[in-house]
Amino acid sequence: MLQKAIITRLMADFAAKRASKDLGYFLAVTTVASIGEGKVRQQSGDVLFPVDFSCITFKMLTGEVLEGIVHKILKHGIFLRCGPAESVYLSHQKMDDYQYVPGENPYFMNSKSSKIEKGVVVRFLVIGEKFIEAEKDFRAVVTLEGDYLGPIS
Image (cartoon, rainbow, N blue to C red):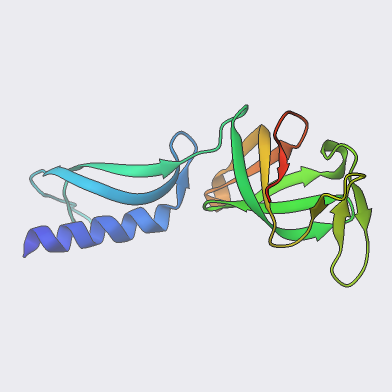
């Protein structure tokens, strides 16, 4: 019973952390290898247990090709969601040949009739990423400059 309580607490702490600069976003604990002997903290009376576990993480790396879903269109670019990352920015300057088309549902269109609008899946190249410590979240800047990048049909 104690082990179940420890694992439940581990999962709650794990979910609250969201991400770390070195490992990226924490997605799921896959295995718990060991739970060590508990140590009582003098001031609070809490018991801390060292836990050895494996987990699945996600981190965008500069130079990596990924896919994301457009969730916001602005005059000067778009924001995409890529896994747990929601602040993936694609500037209009990094969308070769695409032009902004304003309206109630704005979008970007190029000369080949390729359209980037809300809900479209886009393949992109990561050109920079930054971890925001206060938010435990990442920001990324991406481009469509390269082969086989852009909206996916």
